[in-house]
Length: 504
Image (cartoon, rainbow, N blue to C red; front, side):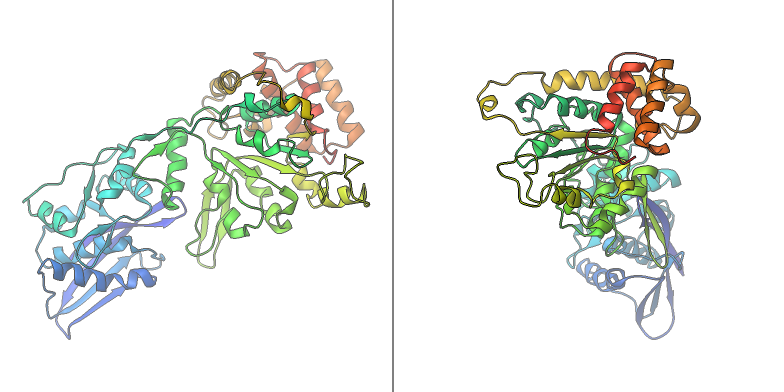
């Protein structure tokens, strides 16, 4: 007799359907698990045996074979425990086979039959909705999976509850979506003294998702500015929140089923490995650039990152996703982030201060910033020098605009872009503009075009740099409430492009 249950295997953020087939046949008593399982999946048979023994269910004196189909798809993780147990109980005719076949299950079994939370409940719920099946998962994962809303989610605390549900002794109640995680507050742009030009660049970056580089002496406020970027970004839309939460679900970062509408802010240390930044390692997990999807990736001490790590950022910045290549698979993760980088002007950090600079000025500055390659520098739309703040200014009371005031302008600019890009699947903000869409929406007036041509010829802008200036100008026009891109918008965009370096 063969019984079937269903679960999922994860390939990036995609959950692929896996059929768990269980057959009982005459022969020497044995429990075989096939279908390309990893070590954690292979050990499932011992956890299943102990959990069923806790329910006083003895395995028959037969040959038990469990196949995970498709057999050529690698199976990783402990979430296969529950579907294997369901298929086995259906084969033993303890629970009805037809009800089991209408369910996608995932969950790890403790030896006493408790269901332990696993990662990936949200992508599994998406798969269940597509397959028109019910999702059965550990109770602690139910609130997370219920956010999909397009399928019924059942959360159980133990295998005993699952058994009582399928035998109609005590039916499980559908899980409810978790609470929206409140946004962390307390950091206001008004706290930053001076640095008005950097604040303006921060506003433009937030409005159009333009990559932003700050260069300044230690303690000038670069990290402080970056930390306040989240306070002016608009909250995630429903689609963006679901996209981001699916990645965080696979990384095990969702707490108590709550989904946040705040944009991610990731700040890896400069000693982080390439796998930590772009993804990889055991199971090809998402890296920092994917965890920052739809949010901010802040890389402090940018030139201190290994050169190989910096160069791997180039393709994701252009394409909006990253492919983690393995011998038997290529795992794709979304990675559409706003890169904010901060750097000192040189190794000692005081190249612009004659009283504190080292003896190798200006060579040390050229060598230090030279660690950022030309192609990488070419991808920064906004480049700002952040000078030190005078001591007298630090004693002054907070002044200038609050984060709420700047956030209102950013939200208005984003709303204009959302209206403009209706019907365009590949463009959400001005940073996504390319091809005919860029020409149609960021076409400057005659004076602006003439200025841009002169700058391109004088400083040798690359084609990428030329187009990025147009995108930034389009965002400045949106902040200005202007439908047309005019000469002042081009001039301001060019000024940010050439502030630090004229490489492209």
